[in-house]
Amino acid sequence: MNNLTFDNRFINHLPADSETENYCRSVENAAYSFVNAAKTSNPTLIAVTPLFAKQLGFSEHDIKDAEFTRVMTGNQLLPGMKSYAQCYGGHQFGQWAGQLGDGRAINLGELTTAGLGHQTLQLKGAGKTPYSRRADGMAVLRSSIREFLCSEAMFHLGIPTTRALSLCLSGEEVVRDKMYDGNAAIEPCAVVCRVSSSFLRFGSFQLPASRGEEVLLIKLVKHSIKSDFAHLLSGSSEFSKEIYLAWFSEISQKTCAMIVHWMRVGFVHGVMNTDNMSILGETIDYGPYGWVDDFDLNWTPNTTDAHEKRYRFGGQAEIGQWNLFQLANAIFPLIGEAEPLQAVMSDFALNYQNSWCTMMASKLGFKDYQGQTDLYLFQSLEKLLSTVETDMTIFYRLLATLPNDLDTDSHQQWLTLLAPCFYNAHDLEQSYLQDFTSWFKRYLARLNYDGLTQRQRAQAMNQVNPKFVLRNYLAQQAIELAEQGDYSEIHQLQLILQSPYKEQPEFQDYAKKRPDWARNKAGCSMLSCSS
Image 1 (cartoon, rainbow, N blue to C red):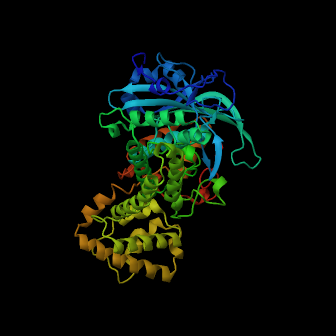
Image 2: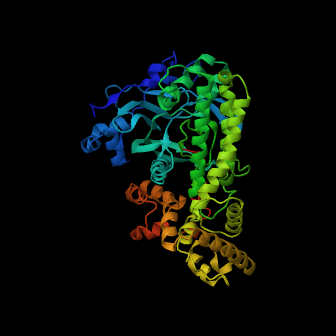
Image 3: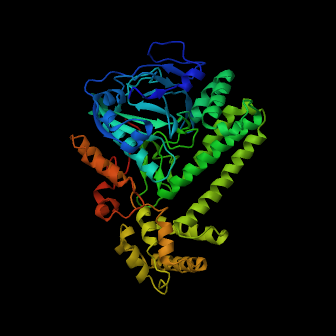
């Protein structure tokens, strides 16, 4: 591990907090504060992502060495590492929250790699920072397992995301009120090492803009462009309004692409605050997220959002655009006029609609999107799926098995094929069966227009419709075992979720519908921000 190279360009190119003591405070005119992770009593490695570790430069010997665990829990720094916490602000549930920052995340440094470029190693749950406010900076095991597993599940689904290198127990314990209902309990602490080329968020630019710190704002934007959008400079070191606009446009496009992916697989982030939005269009901050079991555009896994449903499944694109609007407000001083920024925002709406339609066409097995007729099929299908409890993941997977010569004179054939995706197949009303049969008649005509064989169509559909996702109850089962000292289910899920589009018949039990016992169970159907 001593051969790893850290160049730490973030802290070398941006201003630091002048105060070096680790206590909670307002940090102004600074992008970060130097801080060391809290030393822990008994660091223990639970899981690692071997191939990713190798790509970062860690050998098998490194991973087995106790030094690796010490580093991944913040108990030791490698040569070249300089640990720090970032300063940023953000809107939370639509309200400006002011300074937030890395309250329980500590960056170890930027690692230079041969194949992945610059990658920042960040420990989540590593102790107090100047941005911890009234919290302790720790993360509990249950939330750390969810972040570790979901980061890698998303990566293998082909969705932009921060990565997870390791999951460790710290040996510490804290008191947490899991559901904010007065039933606090002692829980074990853990640390996840998550990785990205940049951990800058929308809120990184919002905070200095809100304070009138224009010099810092410009430095942050320039750093982001030089580090992660260097192609926009085209060999020039000169910055201009056009380059700033191109940067904002790319952020908009990346954000749009990420949300379309979320909709494709049924992922609900749960807390799309602007401080949880990556400049790179990566899924970041896996808190009260959830996977749609029965298709419901109004579902949110976040108990804090249960009434307003601001971050519901079907509202994610709208919130993405709202968040981009807040970023546009922040960088207005660099542009000086509203019209170009508004044009990018308008492009987001159009881009999302076009991308969503293209995505839906691929989910249904069409060669391409053919316009309003296809859109009607998409919208009428979503209405049908929302009418009764229908497992989204299983439905699309089974849809690929539908024969091209489906009998559409009655519902018998399609219902026999699709029955496993309905939570109450025996209770489907006749009117619903008739409506779905009519939909299948139009769908079959559209498939025949493309002229693909059922085999060709299934092969294409199964590349975009996963068989395995990190269902909420699967994560909860792994958590409950881990809290008893059994980490086998974490490792099993790691293995299965590496190949989410493959059949993997030996793991069929992991592709089943949500069981009845999980319908209203905490951790399965509802989660809080508590960690």
